[in-house]
Amino acid sequence: MRIRRGFIVLPIAFVIGATGCSGPASTTVVPQAPVKLVDAPAPATPSTTAVAQPTTTPATATSVPTTTTNTPLPPPSAAALAAVAAAKAKVDADTKAKALAASKAQAAAAAQALTKAKVKAAAVARQKAADAAQAKATVAAKSKAAAQAKVRATAQAKAAAAERARVAAVKAAAARKAKASTPPRALAATYYQNCTAVRAAGADPIHRGEPGYSSKLDRDGDGVACE
Image (tube, rainbow, N blue to C red; front, side, top):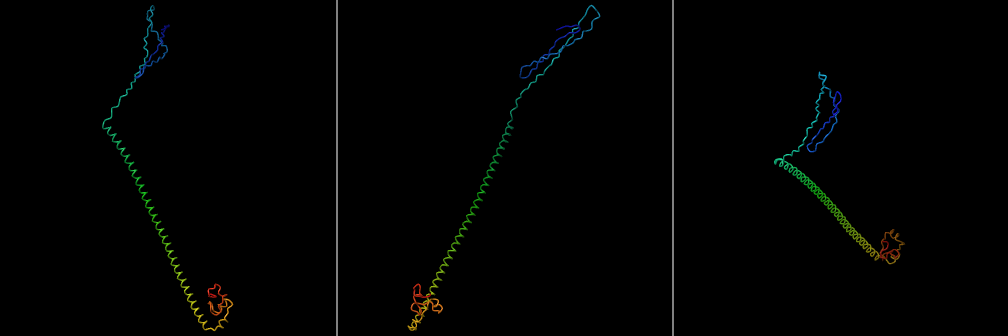
């Protein structure tokens, strides 16, 4: 402390301590400016001088400790636990029901698609069988028609051959009859240069032994000339 004339200078420092709930106290030293004290009035007696000693109360800072207490929560009641378990069970049941419904729907769709595929395959098989039967029937009908045509052609050929044989027989008979009634000299006098002359005379065909027959007119040598 220093004393000067007329005032007293005191260096003052405040020590402020802050105490927490869970840690050691921290101390902060704050320097303060000198405090000027005014002299007290002098007494009437000049012989004595009284110096008033001022009383100075330093300012103090008080910090209120803050305490944080972690109060444990009370345990949940049995009813609350039961409600939570029931809600979870309901959610699980709903999830399982939805999954089962989706699986059933998928299985039903697959079964329906399989049924449609089977129906379509059966229809295609029936159509193929019908087409095959129709083709077979068409082939059979054509074969039958061809066989009948062949039979008719054979019959017609036989009839034509029979007709030719009959005409040839008739002509042969007529030729034999004419030969029998014609003198030998007349037979020798009948002569045809070629088949054109024979046809022009209306004597075709000429069989061997008939008037006008010659080997040059019978090219195939079957005994019938200009046939």
